[in-house]
Image (cartoon, rainbow, N blue to C red):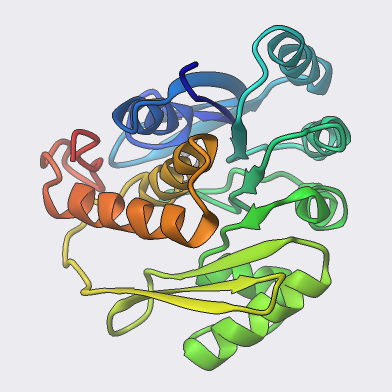
Length: 257
Ligand code: PXL
C-alpha cells in the first residue's frame, strides 16, 4: 500500500508555505498526501494581510473523517492559529497510533500565525504528543525562555523541550550566523548534527514547512528518524539552492528538487 501522510496546517494561497508546500513535498517523496486546513491566510511573497482561523469543531470533524477511513502513517501540524484549534488537535492527537511531527509555528516569514493563548496551549497540550518537535531558534527561545543562538544553547533548549514531554526535538539553526546547523536531541539520549552551508537568498518562504513535511513523508514510509531528517535536510537545501525565483519578495522553494 502507498504510504499516507497528513498535514494539519494553514493555507498559503501563493503555494510556497503551509499545507500547499506540505502536499507538494509529500508528493515529491512518493507519499499520498492528506491536508486539513486550520486557517486561511491572504499573502504573497511580499506581504501577509489577513489571517482567518477556522472553527475548532470544523478542524476536529476533518480529522475524524480522515482517521475513520484513511488513517495516515504519519502526520504533521503547522500553523494552528487559535487556542481552541490547538486544544482540539491535541485532544485528537492522544488517539494517534502513528508518529506526529509538530512544527511549532509562531509566525511565518511575514507575520503572526498563532493567536492569543494558543502558544501556551501548544506547549501544555500538543508538545507532549509530539514524536518530533521542530522549532527554529526563535521558537526554541520562546518555548524554553533560553537565548537560543549557538550550538550549546540549541542543545540546552533541546533537552529542556524533551523534559516538557516531546519524544525527540530537532532544533533548526537555519538562522545561525555561520552554517545551517540543526541539532536532533532524542529521548534515547542521542545527539545528531545536520550541517549544511548557508545559502544566501531571500527565497526561503516555506522552508520550515517543507522541511517538516519531508521528515513526515519519510516517517510515513517507515524510515528511522535520523535518516528521515538527513534525507529531508538534503531535499530542503537543494530546494532552496534551486529556487525558481518567483515573486518580488521572499519567494518559494523548488518543490521539484
Ligand atoms: O513557515 C511557516 C508558515 C506556516 N504556515 C503558513 C505560512 C507560513 C509561512 O509563511 O504561510 C500558512
